[in-house]
Amino acid sequence: MEDRSLSVINLRCGYCEKNSDQRVVAEYKHVTGEVEVIDEIPFSNEEVWFLRMSLCSLCDSINLSVEQVDGGEVTTLYPSPPPDLEGLPAEIARAYKAARAVKSIDANAFAVLLGRVLEFVCIDRKATGDTLFKQLKDLANRGEIPGPLADMADQLRTLRNIGAHASLGELSGAETPILDDLCRAILEYVYAAPYRVANVAKRIDELKNRRRTP
Image 1 (cartoon, rainbow, N blue to C red):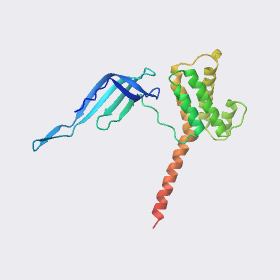
Image 2: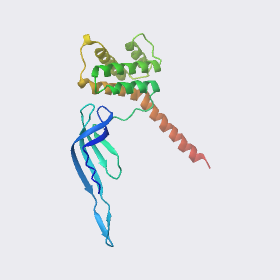
Image 3: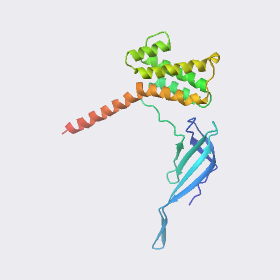
Image 4: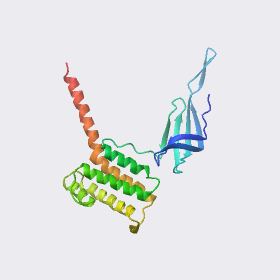
């Protein structure tokens, strides 16, 4: 059987979410099944798996991945990349992607770009007010986002301001997951969840119409 032990593996990093060649620092080979001999002819039902720890060449984070040799696909197990958000308007999706591109590079830049995402959300939902704070409050008053989520959005706005102005202090990597969680919660509520609900409703209608068809 081909030896698939590798010193370098191409993988999407679960932290910075970018594809790069990663240096394998530890590897475990697991074999299941066995070779059977039938009429003096060997038949193999073995499955070979490689569990690897590797270092991202872009952000120097450790990744844990698994590869089934026959399948040829390598899957990142840890850190697990968050699923893509569905239903985002194109402009908001681009802005969020741009923000995530700097997530592992600079927490301040990440906060500033997530603030830009919030601004796009307010524009898309036609919020009124001459400041982002007032626009978020308007969305909450109109029921576009619930009060607790509006408070979360305001916290993100505050962190954005700190990231944008050196005189207010400096954000660190410790705030990065908080920033991302706050923004994802808002995008999930406003866009992704309604998108999934609409798809389910559409699927139910299709099933009902199929039952009515003679």
